[in-house]
Picture 1 (cartoon, rainbow, N blue to C red):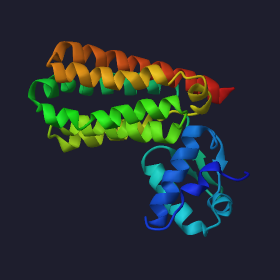
Picture 2 (cartoon, rainbow, N blue to C red):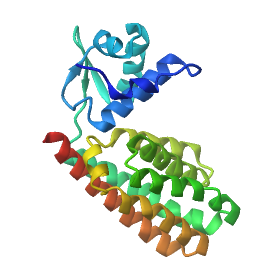
Picture 3 (cartoon, rainbow, N blue to C red):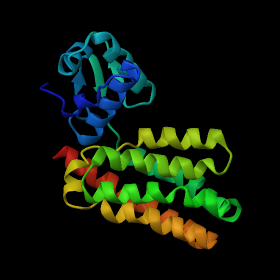
Picture 4 (tube, rainbow, N blue to C red):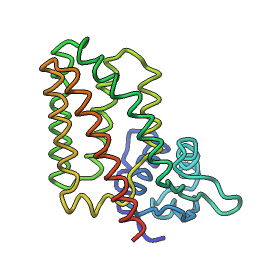
Length: 226
């Protein structure tokens, strides 16, 4: 399958299985691992320059997240997400996150919200510099940290799972055309509205942001298909 660009994410320190899983997620997002294609653990292990065991374990972790599915005697197939799936994921996130943003706006302390500003600014910088992995990681931290202010751990866990299942394929081309920047800047707008105490406007911004993200899903799916 060739050499994975993101194999350099494997470093000393963190558990090898987790590092491989992170690198494979990056390869999925960038489009190196394509939806519908089957990849074997030994073949991927050769790219990483490691044994097949941690790769197989990492792929099983991704299978539990719905990102790949085991294929008997062959390896793992990258799961495909269709338009209906994406619409349903967006609807569920909207039902959870939009009213929760209003509630957090009314209850969170100003200092708790201000802590998130550096992350929001990090998202924008990553989008402008076309650093796709940094963009998605900062975006994940921002949204889940914001929802954590609700005090509901299961809610944060649910949204985290939805985000994994509605991952973006083939975003590299969109990043290079600066199509991620407007969505990135909405994080700062949302934070400013929440800090102003305008719960209704914050909910509206969150609804618009989810719609924007849904359009990026469609663009990235089209790019991946091409």
